Length: 330
Length: 282
Image (tube, rainbow over all chains, first blue to last red; front, side):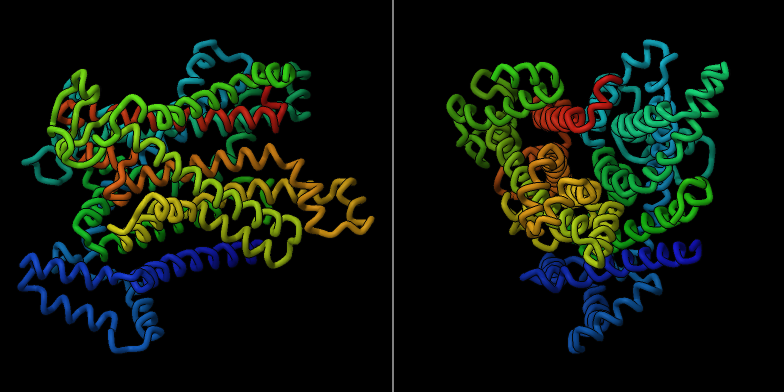
């Protein structure tokens, strides 16, 4: 049974990756105007990238083998992808799409990863307290406005934060990942500077997502509290703190981890626009710049990479989950 | 009638949500009577004016009256949500019933598809689709693109409800007495699922509006029709936040926040109708 589950889950992962790759292959060919041809024409007509144009055109003809049948083009494309070759950027030729993504990726992973974990932890604790009868009144007052915040898209909250904390009170920088003139390294001054730039974007993710986690945890706690073993624990006269932590939270927290897997995609989508709003040098901003300059290979490359990354993350969580929670069997 | 009023007071959250959404719909309907919506076109007004009596929200860098832009753009955004919400609920209902009622291979396939689409970051797929059709997008095509994301939640909720409902005794009685499957679905199950269908609809509309604003803020929305998301895109494009032009970037955000708060209250209110256990704890 366990092996079958693992195999099926890994199978689903490959189907997702294959589907994403196929969508990337099919869409430029289905749309009435060929975006690749158009983009190349546009670049040549502007006189940019003249030097690289020959190589670029040849690479494209080779890559898509314009004289070859479609199924062969498709196979070549899949082989290329499997080797991690995402092609060239049109605007920054001869930069490779894969390299551009690798430069941007650490910024996004640190920002979105940390912000998500912080939100997950804070929201889960808050939600657990919201459902507990011994809770101080402050938390009950805090809950409704936080839940309302969760109805607002991350990036719009980000705009408001920029205005309040970077424009009106000049406590934080207006945007970017680090101050102009600093070199990117692991020195303490740079790290402090980078952290200062990351606080507002991270805060917008935390504030906008807190309610989601709190609500989920609260729902689970309410359900757990109706269970017989909770009544028994109370009847035994156990200390309420112990009941809360060892009996309540422990049972309620696992579905939250499932949500973590599901929400990964949501967080990444939202964070793309957070990066745009804060001009943060991550993958989202790379995508935005690519859209603005019609750099289709970068757009497709980023989309593909992010889908694969999220696929891996959900796969790992799904495989870990049955080990964590004995109630889950597949 | 009195009973309904009573219920409205009981379900305050639902009522508040409905009032907010109604007010925003009215803004689009009544606004054109007071404000010249011709000002929403490029180059009609003097560019970069600060707010005045004549232009309460000022004008933007290409000479649009920003109040007129909001009044024209709000209904457009709502339209996108409505079209995509109807499509999303329609697909979700069909998929949910097929998957939950008939089961088998169709169920495996549809449930798998819904799960996959829920984990994949939808905005990225939309970006890929929308960037390939750039320039040719209008409000209707954008709604179609966005509806690709709006069917998964309805599919899942309806499927799980149908699964439990299928085993209830009154459905069994109907089946034993020879009622045809489509008839059972339409006459016996649908009416009992109405609150779920309503909640699913609100959910699809919210997903669709969220996705459409995301696309537009990236610059992939209709280029020559004002929408709330495009107003934010132009606001970002001309770095209005960093220049402190509050009257430009804040109004679309306020409207968007109101739309989401309204939809959120409606769905939370519907939740309380569906699931009475939630009532006591808030």
